[in-house]
Amino acid sequence: MNVNDYIGSDPKIMFGKPVLKGTRIPVELLLEKLAMGETIEQILLSYPKLKKESILACLLYATLVLKNEIISSAA
Image (cartoon, rainbow, N blue to C red; front, side):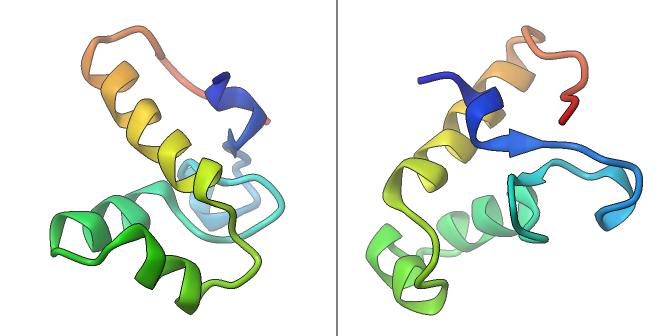
């Protein structure tokens, strides 16, 4: 999976925070929901236009950021 297919950053959208492409949904929001115990299925019910792969891309993105493999993400 290539996270750049799912996640982008644009200074004009959400102040440049990484978001799921084509949305204004920040990666951090989805990570927070998962950390608080929401399941992928519950998130998909709340955001019916999302796909499971998009949520998994958020997890991979966080992993890569922590590994310092992504410095910044451009749209």
